[in-house]
Amino acid sequence: MSASEIADNKWELEASKPPVSDVGGILQIVVVGAFTLMFAWMMLFTFQGIFGSKRESLADQYGNLTVDGKKKEAAPAAPAAE
Image (cartoon, rainbow, N blue to C red; front, side):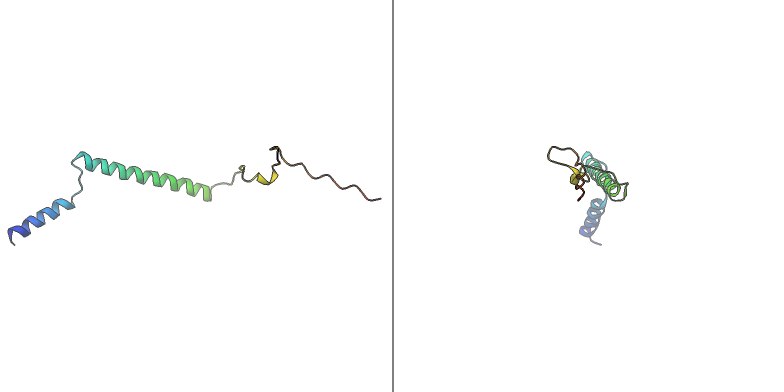
């Protein structure tokens, strides 16, 4: 092996090591971990919304609302024909 190949191998070995010995490397790991936790948190709420128990919300009550925001009353019965 020539000296340049040995130097190249040392550079490749050094470049393949994770940079955990300096502040920038540690910060990079922390940021990636934070984004991973945020993604897992979002997926948790997504699965809760899909598979969780059904709750009534304002969207479910939309058909019952009137102009003034009160619930619709039942339609009055038609008068009996004589």
